[in-house]
Length: 118
Image (tube, rainbow, N blue to C red):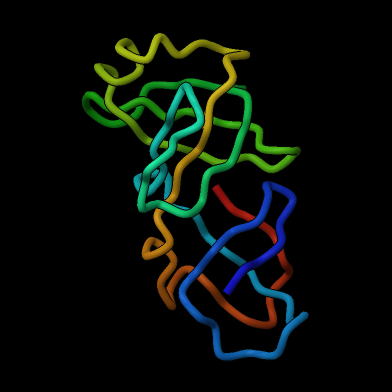
């Protein structure tokens, strides 16, 4: 199923509902990878361009990165080592990469306001 969102098109496992039904999608920060160049030859089908708007320490070695994807915020949880290796900084252009299988029944619900959550 292909869903339209402010962040861009999202491909999720097939949803058993009529086309046009509002759906709420939750994107878990732990399921978001960050790329500094548009990935190719990748099995992940959701690649959203965006700009880093926030970075804050998470638990342990984790860093929470806020990415503005066309007005919708997508959160990514990565290691500080990855942040340093990718030379991530506020205002940096990146791609949020989310595997289709990250969207399970617990992360997609019918009848709720349509939006992409961080």
